[in-house]
Amino acid sequence: MSSILLIEDDTSLFQEIKEQLASWDYEVYGVSNFNDIMQDFTSLKPDLVIIDIQLPKYDGFHWCRMIRMHSNVPIIFLSSRDHPTDMVMSMQLGADDYVQKPFHFDVLIAKVQAILRRVYDYNTEQIELRTWNSATLDYAKNTVTNHKGTIELTKNEIYILKVLIERKNKIVSREEIIQRLWDDERFISDNTLTVNVNRLRKRLDELSLGRFIETKVGQGYQAKEVAHPHD
Image (cartoon, rainbow, N blue to C red):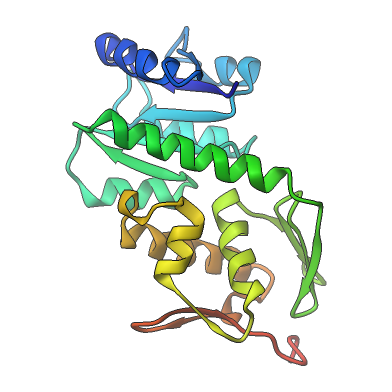
């Protein structure tokens, strides 16, 4: 049974979401102190976090930053604000998905199931090391290492990289990446994929690898493999 930390200060909405998730056999927990959410997160060690953007004292973006300093746990943002920048900010901070209020519970449940299924299936795969442009990818640890150092990626970022490297030097369509990453493309926007790939490329730039993830306009993305990546 997967555990979910639901960070929502609207009591009635919290109870409604909790009941809906509980009906699917998820264990749902709230926070005891909105001034110190990390205390509950650390003690619960949830499998998934659902967090509202508008919260007392500090907003959801703040707590997402705090969580990402310690964990790559999947995060879904909830927001009642109709600002496209909220979704972009969420993805840039390392969130896995974004749900606009008001929403149908079927959509939220589908997103939760897809993310947990992906993370669970991914974590149960055989530990695999792969090399790409003289870098070593550790899919179990979500890390990429080369002569410049090691970076740790989010689960979305490492999975996108994995999909691209499986077909290195070939174009992978945006639709295929979306379907493999989120199971059902109806529940994710095209813009979210763009944000995730841009964030992945920016992280890879720390190892001088970002330039090998190429955007093919109107087609998709390509992970290039070259003979001498340090040249």
